[in-house]
Image (spheres, helix red, strand yellow):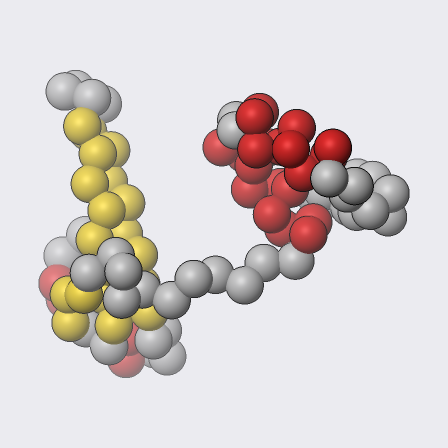
Length: 86
């Protein structure tokens, strides 16, 4: 992602931006964080506030089976909906 694209996203109203890039040819990835067009550290990036359903969906998407099992064992609501499915 080029800097001009980052500035354009911020101009469109995006306050915080996280850009993750994966180079499959060499198996490397990098994540950069921005606030109003300026590069910031990962610690300065605000923690996302996700609902229970959104956290479950993220764990399913990431394939994080251990964390998903912990959430289920801790008593996930039977009303939780993941991607439109209970």
